[in-house]
Length: 635
Image 1 (cartoon, rainbow, N blue to C red):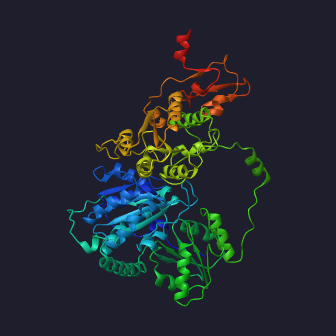
Image 2 (tube, one colour; image 1 turned 60 degrees about the horizontal axis):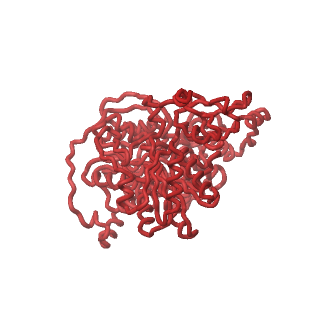
Image 3 (tube, helix red, strand yellow; image 1 turned 45 degrees about the vertical axis):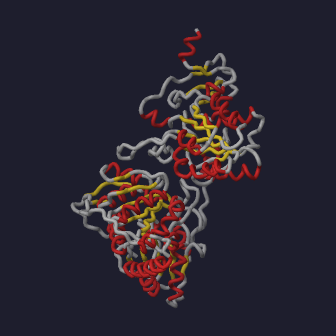
């Protein structure tokens, strides 16, 4: 058969002035679409793979209020406040971020909005950079809100413009689900001019609509929401973003990025296929689905994530009295875990037509090469202040004769989670934002001893303040180490309340962490420089003896911005006469700038990697690592 249907770039075009083609990442295309929709407010919390959207809006049009919020719940509530006034707003987050924003999302569905509001959530099948492979389409069913999903950057651009029109037509927020391959794929995208809507913000008092304590009002709003969802379903049955391609008797129902895999594979498969490309997983356009199923002898559902669409299609078929076999993840044609690939989709289609290929077996030379290849796990950067913080914590426990396996050290979400790897192997847990403190709180009660929690500065503002409040309130025996590297480093150095920075250059206030912690009632608070191992170690030892909550703020800027500003200072060198080749510096820090030379049986420091933090200088038992200025003074 011929290649099925139109190219993804042929997705419906929405007029917004003069159009031109640009090479854009999916996230950039979404930002362009939002600005072409007249968005005046964009916020969220940085999280891969969604981060670049707000950053792009801030770069392209600084007059738009495009700034980060402390967490996703705050972001959604602020955006709702804007949308209540009739202006258009955008909220972005990664998959697990919607869990944080779920509370306001449920109530927001009942109240609805006046101006368009899009809640963009970037799911991460794989997962590549997330704790789980959470599928946020289920939040559409839970909240009774529409969900849209694009298949490529062009459609992401066009579909978000449609999302704002949909949101305002029915006065509901729209969940815009993307996946990593759409967010971070780069393609030619046709874009238009930015739009400024001629609107003045107005908010009218409406108790029944906006006050959830109104019991009778809630029932009315629930009924309104159900009726609205039915109207949206009817529209989805005919939207051009859902389309049928081909005329075969084997049906493929596909959503999102895997549509591109289907297009790639079909020309080389000898099958009689008909494709239904969907961009609206919720509410499911049931008439479109059942009409499609009536024209095929069997069907397969191809989707990224959980078998959400497959289950919905089967229910629709059952309710319509259809007996068409429907395959997918539940039938074992596609895996329930991991990201889909073209080969997985190809094998699923071949299995459907009875031509399944044998499992691919790697050649012996490939297996040998892989076995010999050095393992390269991710590591903390040379000069990362977190290395000093954890080294000092482990040394403090040793000095107190507590042992590294007797006192749990809880980690949190951030670069410092890399401390789980050798040689530090410091943290015992890494769960969700802010959980390090909550877990420590619970274990201090259960185990009757001091427990350590480590948390980054941005994560502390995101969701760490509340569990620290509880520790103070209940006088729990915890040591909280706030690893303040002055940025949101893991997602690309975004500002947060503790930096006073802004994405668009606006002047904001800097929240001082030490003052905040003291205001909460923590009596023992110390700020230390994690590059100073001795001072940090002594502060931890002292804090471990304090009854009740104690806080240590390990404050030192992330080294990457320092490098970018060209502010790296003097770098140490190895004094070969003193170096015994014991490798203590490597084994105690794991710094990539330290290299053992088997020829000389000495350690050397790579000057291209070294940032001059001096941590290795402090752990060498033979004083074999010194700064050139110190060597000069000692002569």
